[in-house]
Image 1 (spheres, helix red, strand yellow):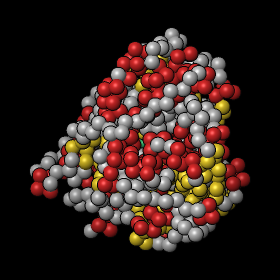
Image 2 (cartoon, rainbow, N blue to C red):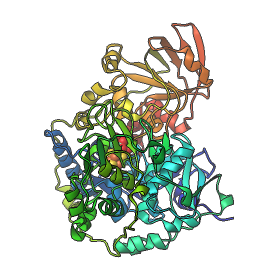
Image 3 (cartoon, rainbow, N blue to C red):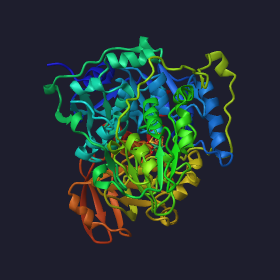
Image 4 (cartoon, protein in one colour):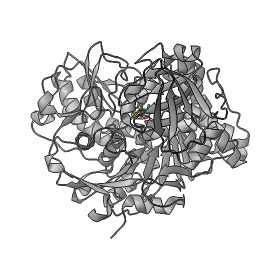
Length: 640
Ligand code: MIC
Ligand code: SF4
């Protein structure tokens, strides 16, 4: 018997705990990344921990989300982030350089290393064999302070790839096929590890597309082996020295196996409003489309853009739609300019956007009312595009480009002859938009620059033994962090200002929620399965905390959101019997005996005179953290 790659890397990094699935282990973290929308909060927290310099091998601060500078707020945050990076020994990626995950893959990610990022798509680096996990900003700042990262030891699902992709079918279709099989909850508690003869048919950027969107299955992370293909990619990025081989396990080493024959995969789409709602393009073909958007951390590599350029060459986009293209990095753009392929995009009528998240996070390019927008992104949650009644379909770059030409959803196989796009043997390397860390002496002279929108963190108080109040909101299954704490051009600039951003909590579901919560001096939220799926944004816990939310009681939680609730002192509880969900309504007065957070916690529905048993999956440490009011007060004691 061999070892899975997951096991090999974890065993090398475990500093505490046993390798038993479901048991908590503490991991040494080699690298961290942050982006600006979660980064300002992460660094405010890092500052308050009070250590002079990061303790990781490498930490990078990227600016890619809030790049629409409609007033002073976003640029002020960027300036703050730059000064923080220079103060604390962190690499700084300047705005315009590209999307964090694409850049990290190109310039920093290494096979066999652990990486924590304050963004749920950090697993993109799994395409190069890095064990890369998304987490809340506070967990990232704690890792930067040199403390280990704690997680439940995962089970490993081996995804066996056989065969080879057909012409016009791409890596995006593979991950959509995985989502078709697993849905948006099927990966919970697992690492998705790819193995089998099909692996060698996929390049690193293709593997990264797959690990990127593995997040949408709820998996802890996804990872590919590190092989000769990984080596060539690293060499082409002049980083051959950081290559190590990572050989996958044998079939019997995995807790579960899912087999995908690449030759049988066909062009697919995720339908509104969930990445897990999959149909074939053949079934949907002919649907009128008003917008096509190509880019995001899932599909913005040079290979993706070259394929799109090849399809658009000599064509004009349909007059019934708009096409936006955002490349993942300056390296990608540089190559497209050099090869002339950028010309094909421009000549076809594409609107070339900045190398940033852009429309993926609702930063511009909102679709028209009631429109169908076809995107190469990874999320299509309700309202995320900026237009609540728009229908977003998630597809491959090939399908998106074909659709841009015809004006209706089009199977790219109908385009006829396929021309293979090739990556260059050597990438153009130009790191001049990365600012490297300063020496400790130089760092000491740096002043941290804070704009007026950067407000201090809320205060955290110890948890009482009994929680009382009203059920302020009852929601159903699969509530995403985009429901809880929406993003977009209007709201994202308040990421450093918790009192302001709190006014938008649950805006897409019930815009009276924030005021009602404040008027009632807080209360409770009741939810269904997979509560908090989606992003790592800790604002989905911090802002409800500011509004006085004491506990969230649901049928089940998504991993990162659960951790964020604990971090900010909101008690995450689940129904012992899911049918009890029907025994509580919005408006009911309830009380919860917290005590020592024993296995079973008692909830009393005072309005209905009922008692309900609740459970939790909290470790002893989580309980300790909740008792003192959150992770920040807890961590301050640890580093003293
Ligand atoms: C997302 O894709 O939802 C985001 C925006 O990248 C988030 C992070 C954030 O909310 O800032 C994520 O995926 O973690
Ligand atoms: Fe940015 Fe979209 Fe990727 Fe999130 S999913 S990191 S918003 S490109």
